[in-house]
Amino acid sequence: MKKDKNIAQFLIDKLESNGVEYVFGYPGEQVLPIYEALRKSNIKHILMRHEQAAAHAADAYARITGKYGVCLATAGPGAMNLVMGVSAAYKDNVPLIVITGDVSSDVKGEDTFQDMDINAVFKPITLKSYNSNTPEKLENNIEEVFSYNKQGITGPFHINISKDIQIRPMNVDHKVIESRKIKLPLEYDIKDTIKSIEDAKKPLIIVGSGIIYAKAFEQLNTFIDKTEIPLVTTYSARGIIPETNDKNLGLVGTRGTKEANYASEEADLILALGTRLSDRTRSHINTSNIIQVNTKNQQKNAEIFYQNHIKEFLEELNKNKLPKTSKNWIEEILSQKDTTPKKYAQTEKLHPEKAIQTILKQLNENVTITLDAGTSPTYFTIDSKLNKHSQMLFPGGLGPMGYSLPASIGASFARPDDIIFATTSDGSVQMTIEELAVISTYQLPIIIFIINNNVLGIIKQWQEMANTPKYQVDLKNPDFVQIANAYSIEADNITSLKTLETKLEEAIKDRKPHLFNINVEDIPIPLPK
Image (cartoon, rainbow, N blue to C red; front, side):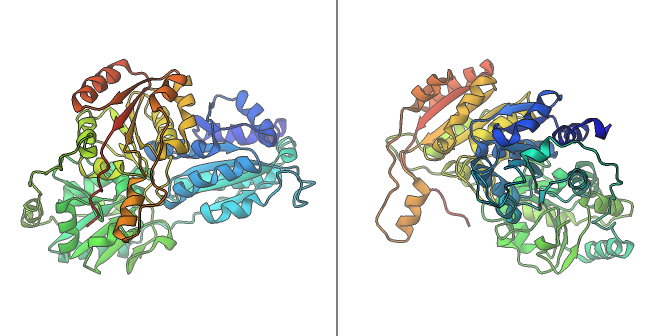
């Protein structure tokens, strides 16, 4: 019964009844009633070491499972520390529930200790920021959050509750009114789409993470089987069909494969399904004949735009007899595959791409990779073939440093049977290095790779391209192996590919935390085409 609970207990019960299994957070004075409710629940709280890391961990969990990732922080500095992680999730439409405590409502707005307008801060980086200061508001707010998710509207939602409100009784009995915000696909829209496919000689499908969050894998595969239209993906949808399968041409856009970008340039019809069609995705598109299906009007990037749930749209399409694509078009695309062998400059230290290729030799269906801003994402992107969706996680819309370590924690709880490769750099790792404590505490099967060139390499590269002197990019790094050992994590300095290969195989078999500090040459990364 609602009336037997306080507001904090009701909130946690609603999360649990809606399938939330984990909350990533850090306790504080203004969220103690919520923590007491968590203690009594079946939800597992993962104690992170920084609130930014809590948001990144929840983000990775959500990208993999398609469910809400939940993060929790106290008022003032706790809430502010969440901002970076929530911003990254917002840019990539990742479903998060962000819960913050606040100062007591009777002093709110009086500039007391830790008082600030938390909702104003979170409003531009969430789909909605709620100030749940009554039982009725909280119940309406949490019901609306889960209603949005069911309709395919994904992104972060923020719930802010003052500490004194959290302990008030849930003495309310009112009817929550649910309203559908996303319309069902219209019959003539479906017919027009089929007619466009019939008229096209070179159609192409671009899919984004909306397919993952809508759990529309079966519907997508059915549509492709019926039409044989070739498919390319955004970064966040890589592996939605194994990239070893000829149906999937791989990543499209600024870091896209040669065949994916060729298809994008030559296509006379593009079906953009569950993607916002970002500027990077659109970089090689020449046609204006684009049909975009998305639940957010603000992400409209095509003249023909259907604001529909992508799963429902595909289901309606699949009810019809659909035209098949010419095999000549597919053969034309596949003939563009780049088979030119790579050439590498001679280096004193390890070449970073060769080191990353050695790591990728161990990539199989039981490995998930988290990436950080820096040198490594480029090589991991262009040298990998993914076997499943969300197998390589990178917050590409914002690209913050420090994502990989905390994201590997969320990924490990989302895929407990996987080995997680947390790949980072000597710059990025020091943004969230404290999360080694969490990896050690839970003995998670996470292998950390620090691609260490003692410099902020990409910033240096930009300075060189601008013909300005190198400035403030050289790093005097600590001994990362000793730091890992201090957290009771085994670690090795790597100066040879053979040692990396041997030690990595051992670490995978061991299924315990391990850190590799890989000393590489400072090599400029290949620029996007």
